Image 1 (cartoon, rainbow, N blue to C red):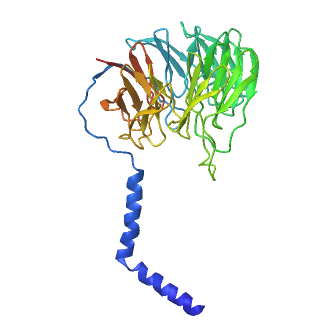
Image 2 (tube, rainbow, N blue to C red; image 1 turned 90 degrees about the vertical axis):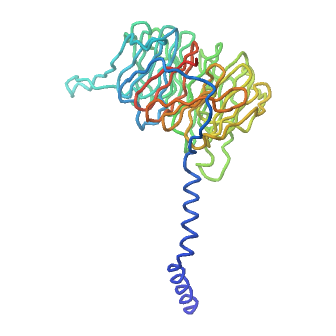
Image 3 (cartoon, rainbow, N blue to C red; image 1 turned 60 degrees about the vertical axis):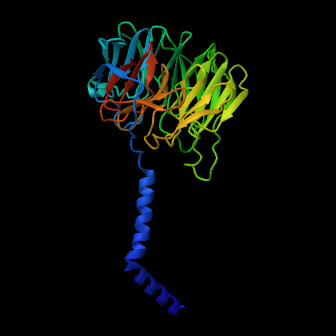
Length: 402
């Protein structure tokens, strides 16, 4: 045995001094590192011309919180939050500030009743004349959409980074512990809550809630979609989108973190597991499944769904069958946002502040603009032909296609 150990030691000594073997391992490390790097941007002949209409700095932004802040658009206004305590209302066409609200909370009496800022690092929700947003400490703040005056505030059990949904006289809040709470929109009184068990490991963030006629749709961290009765929180149905398969918790992550999209009676949902499902909304019955999807939400055109996978490939899926119409791999590993549909184009943001416009008919790169040098993590929003995007530095900008 000692002879074998000595021989092994000698061999290790020889290999350690062998530059050829060192080169083998160095080469493999270099190849692996290169394979993990974001794809370099390729040159192309632009076929679209995005024009920046306006830009605005809101404050510090979310930085590295990972909340994927995005604006809300309603009734010709853009509602957005900075990373610390401010909520803004801006005119969609001009970017003019309409109002600004500074959120503070009272400390305990032993601290002299002083105030401190609320960390509003989530995204706002807007509708029915209200703007609602949550904080990292579980505060829920509801403002008058016209004036920015505070209507009421409440507390939930965990941080809130997903935008609340406002529908049929209720404000629905999703907190990071898997609980959904419904509040009376007029008074702030809690109506009901529903808990959903979380897996051991999840993607940072929560799916925005989607409101339908009397039904609230929730994408969950275990890869399912749940339909709840708006009036009492009762579960109407639950359907898996991405199955948590794999030997490790990392492999099993299957979060539905993008907002489910309801068109007519059909609900579309995509999972981190790179699966997209079309579901009959009233019954929960699956209509078709595609093995392409992502956690950041989807863009919807008249004929297709556009999704970006975790690996950075963008796909267009036929809405009636789920078949892939085209794929665009040129943006691999660039940490893409969920796509938005902007006219005849799909748009995604990336980790380096770039926005990429892809043609909806064939997926070809059509235009590229850079908005600052900080990552864009939240899904771009589109209304009235204007695309609005927010970066992690608190920058907000609007673009139109000429």
